[in-house]
Image 1 (spheres, rainbow, N blue to C red):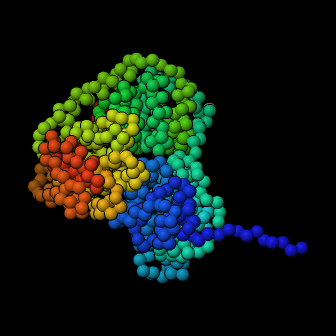
Image 2: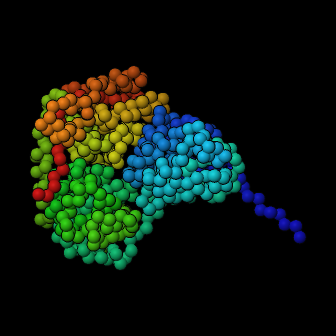
Image 3: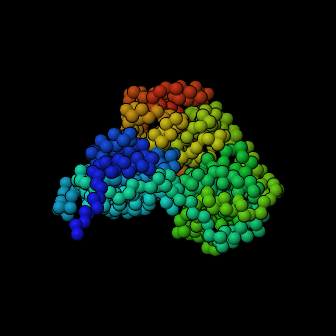
Amino acid sequence: MNETATQIPTMKGARFIAEAALSVGIDHVFFVDAVLRRALVEMEEVGIRRVLARSEKAAAYMADGYSRAARRPALCMAQSVGAANLAAGLQDAFLGQSSVVALTGRKPAIEQYRNAYQEIPHEPLFAAVTKMSARVDLPAQLPLLLRQAFRVATTGRPGPAHLDIDGMTGDTTAMADCALAAMPEASFGRVPAFRPPADPAMLAQAVAAIDQARRPVLVVGAGAMASAAEAAVAALAERLSAPVVAALDAKAVLVEQHPLNGGIVGTYSRSCANRIVAEADLVIFAGCDTGDQVTSNWTLPAPGIPVVQLDPDPAELGRSYPGTIGLQADVRAGLEQLAAAVRPRASGDWDARARTLVAEWRAETAPALASATTPIRPERLCAELTAALPDDAVLVADTGYSSQWSGTLVELRSARQRYLRAAGSLGWGFPGSLGAKCALPDRPVVCFTGDGGFMYHMAELETARRCGIHTVTVVNNNGCLAQGARSIDAAYEGRRGNKSEIYVFHPMDFARVAQSMDCFGVRVEDPADFRAAFAAAARAGRPAVIDVATDPAARAPLGWTPR
């Protein structure tokens, strides 16, 4: 008896890449030529915007900013020789729990291990900065592995995934017929893809501990923001009348006016937030790691204080604190479970104490926020930016002093405002803001960076102008890397020498640089002129740079720690 074999449908690899990206909601791709050119042609046909960056690292940062802003996966690509740069750019996405899928090309198998031009092994480069890194050796693997990459990037603790595709530009695979597996499911187009609840037995332990506490505090981190858990944080805090302090990544979890907002905690922090944690008798870490920055080098909370930790990654539970009550769950889902189960309590001495600490901190910082001196104090710049930010703005901050100044002193007064910051890579802020603007084209996107950070990827002004990505970049221009000045002074104590050689730059006028690239540029030297400059930048209809001449002697306060 003759039987007709089932015909397996096929599709060119290039078309599959484009349709798979579209199926998870990706509408921009960030890349440096030459990579997957045929896929780029197919992306144009399906409506995906192609953003050609000036460097692979910046392309990765753009994808990272896009994913964090959109809370869905992002796509970046580079050819074989650019893979090392792309991998370096994924460090921030990995640390920041960002769902970036990276595609690279590599030389065909016959050319491997023979000193092929520009070729080095890619696997070691991506191993430390991805949740998954896999080789696509055969066209038939592409549908299977690309679907898996989106799955890995958006589930559990979000993070980058990488595919290394056969052919220096990847087109060996892109030109081939691929036997079709399923397209990535729609659930992989959002972060988190799934929302598993906490185990009931562990939930009961956490509820019992919380109910016994008299001074509980919520410490909220990046995982809560990735999970869109803002409302769930507020609900639990209000049920407990417990203060909320935030890692920098979760600055926008509560508006500043909320009576339970205790501010930013850790080494880059408000003293009031650290003092609240120091006085707490139970700490609830919600989507927050327990590394050195948020715990102020593991001095907060005090040894022996009970800890409840909620995270989708079981490896995080109890990592730093023995005896932790660990809840493995989606952060939003776990918080909702806790809010439904804990005993409600009225406002009392504890939340009043937290408000007193916040009020004391505000009184201490008020003079610097109002300073009219020139060069401009960074505190005054932050006060001016607070007043100028639109109610629906996304503020994107670089690392170092940029995140320290903006995280502690720029106030978010609307629940629609958001805050994204570098997870540690200086220079991330500007390209990250371009990606955020691509994700949220109808929202004002403002980058806060320093002169040191901006100069890393200043060339992307051309990308922004060419691609019509209209952000406003505020450069805190003090002519140096001021964050290191304290330790440099200490190193030179009692010795002569040219210490400025270590951290001081040649004077730069970034407004003129922006103008030379056909962008809007304005320089501000008097704090009273900032708001008018910001308004002009916002209506410029071009990428805009506000170059603010600030005091190089200004130092951000060191984090408060228990004596």
